[in-house]
Length: 275
Image 1 (cartoon, rainbow, N blue to C red):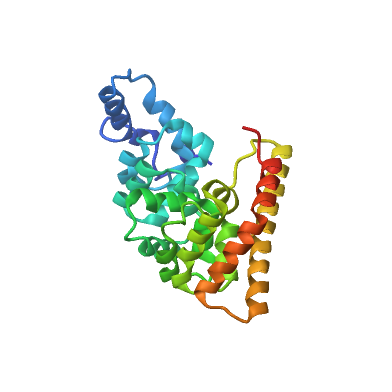
Image 2: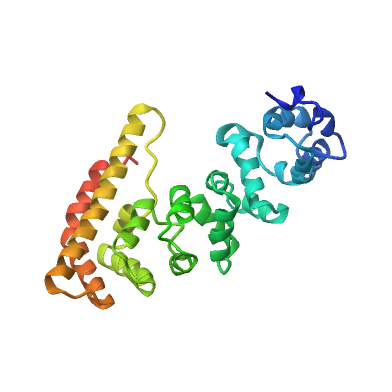
């Protein structure tokens, strides 16, 4: 139920000129926009996500979020992400930089979030929140017990791009930490940037509806299969020649990528969404 039925919690009365309503009006005035029913619209949008008085300090952050995002993205995810982060300044950084990060952050516990965030301490703010916005990969960083802080540091330059299947490939191959970035650089050079992103990078969106969802699942499965074939090919070569030195693994990767490049490119063209 909404807050209107919860005695002792935030009510519409909290949205006065000293709190959210005033901030909404001030923002619109500063932007040269008329202040219509901003407070009532805003309360209607966010009331089911505001539970406790401690959330009042987050009002300056809430009013920076377009009302429509609470409906399309889910206000509960935004508020839960702020709880997980636990710091108003850091939460504002997420909102101002890449609000899509809220979806993955909201699904982490505070300890897991802090582990990933601390590992990305040397990343700039944009890179940090872009990595969290890469939802499935970010969640894997928090949950996969094979992945340490040091691994996240080693992969930081790629984590905003890697799909979760590509992330798993790196650990399925049991690459040494110093091999990880070299592995991805070799794959980029062997496949070309465009094909590398198609295989290793973010999966495209096929739209709404069950048919689109089915195509999305098929595409993801085929990308996972392509990456697992890559792993199998590399392991076969290293086993055949009984060598697993870092430079040899990279050479094997280059050979496998080049051998399958045209076939993989054709498969992706057939599977990818139009446009």
